[in-house]
Image (tube, rainbow, N blue to C red):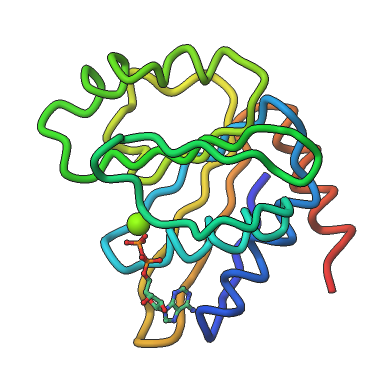
Length: 158
Ligand code: ADP
Ligand code: MG
């Protein structure tokens, strides 16, 4: 299952993130792909806001994976594979494999750089730059859990 959307402002991409947050369960994995500036971090900011996280979300650079506690006591991990020379090895060493196997919510930017680490089931979200303020956002379910998630998301569309 696949949903293809278009947003015309950063705030709209954040609002989509907040909507996805309402459909998330513990253990869910979101694999974000798309070029620099396509909107992956912007989306994650909205998602974190939707989870009730008050902290400012910035791209994890020095620590590779940032951790936040959400409004319900759940944990969100935000990983970014950009700028890593050997992303699968470095992310494995940082513990991302364990996080994928665990019960927390995990969002990974540049997930296409760690194909060998990704689990069988995850939600892929691909961001494409259309023009300065417009992005195409394509959500693809890999696995039954994420078909359910997208159905839930569609049902709760504004
Ligand atoms: P990435 O994490 O993919 O590198 P960012 O989210 O950091 O990208 O940057 C996206 C930039 O594009 C931000 O400066 C944001 O304000 C801007 N922008 C403009 N329009 C949009 C849109 N429709 N969706 C997301 N970001 C947008
Ligand atoms: Mg980013």
